[in-house]
Image (cartoon, each protein chain N blue to C red):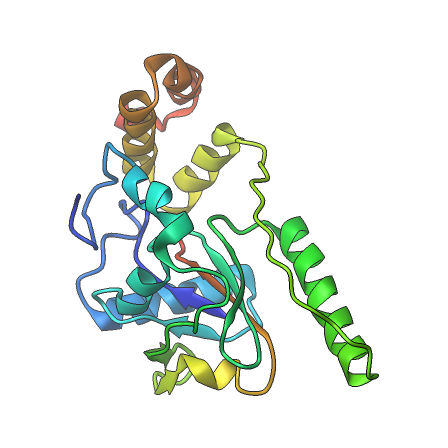
Length: 64
Length: 164
């Protein structure tokens, strides 16, 4: 397992994470909440703010 | 919304993340590049929320208004998500109209076209040659040299001259 912010793409392609995904969190569970930064303002916000008023979609990723 | 995680394929133009300021900068670049109108949110440098949701590079979740997970996918697929969102919207409309609903549980393993050549072309344009060679080496190592061969051939023909 490599460090989280690895310098080079790992040879094992972090496949263990893909295998672990089905049981990492399950449908029906409470969604993990926490602080993130709003890129537009740089200000901290809680993720739950976005599902407070109705369903929301969260996509995870990066420019690379 | 979009949650910015870590550089999956760090390279010359987008190096691995070492500060939250750099992470904010990369996230803002992505908003500009892709003309994103949805909120762009940035996880902390350690990826605390990314870990809590399963740590994959391009996951999608739908969270219900009550804060429970309605849908989760290991890969973001617009067609698949559209099916789910159509259903979510219809359920809300029907429930509000007084139609009784009962939940059921479903699992599904759909597939997507594995167009690795287009992927490495985008990597080359966005990040640079190092990300491409590292990805091809990882395919050769974790899958097979046979799987990596067409990518190596493409790279032989298309790599920028100074990287060969």
